[in-house]
Length: 251
Ligand code: OAD
Image 1 (tube, rainbow, N blue to C red):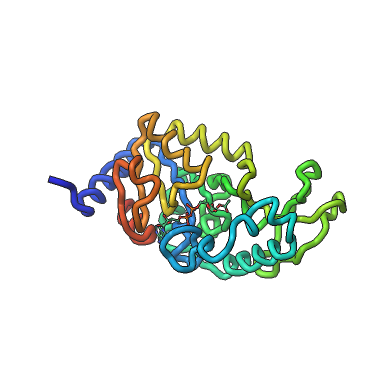
Image 2 (tube, rainbow, N blue to C red; image 1 turned 30 degrees about the horizontal axis):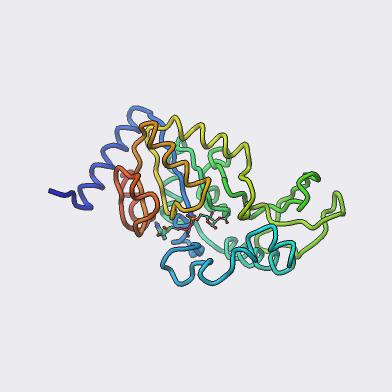
């Protein structure tokens, strides 16, 4: 007889309780769906507001796009920054924040996990952070925090004065921050349980972290409103909103 969604939730919950009791390593790997209930748009799901159904990532999220029109790219990120500044964390962020031992490996560039109370040392931002700007020339190395509510318009780097400042996020065709990637890979290869929350699991290399966990024997619990690229790797797939499922999984 096949398992019902309630059976799956109960089984996954029993496993989580075991992990917590025995202090076994749990890592959460999240994507845009984690912040969706906070009103932050996802990129490529069925939601009509999904960003890549309305905007062209090659123009807005690539080094070539920035080269071609730095002002447009900066304005688009500033629009997203203001939305993130207004957003409140949701029940999924709040539930994760109740478990300070869980490492949060996220593809999200927002700061909602930190806003919910997760210590910044426990958040690995694989795709960078939108509340930072950096010099477009890697060799310069200049970086600064930006005010999400009132982000500055396109401007030259104050250190080298040679190139523009750009959002501190990872664009298509760029490498992930090396330290973040190495740390995430190492922690995920030692975990007993990987929670995969609100990601289509289609963007690489980040999505490769799921098979890394699976192949070294971790249990994979997928939480998503729909099936995803992680479905076939899941031990338990819990379909629903992260803000509903996560509190029930840990209660
Ligand atoms: P996607 O937009 O690709 O996927 C979001 C996933 O969240 C989908 O599978 C949805 O079904 C799911 N989802 C939506 N609402 C949810 C909810 N309330 N609860 C649970 N799940 C929900 O976003 P990512 O997988 O994060 O990269 O995309 C990965 C990367 O692609 C992003 O980091 C971004 C993008 O291009 C960069 O900007 C570099």
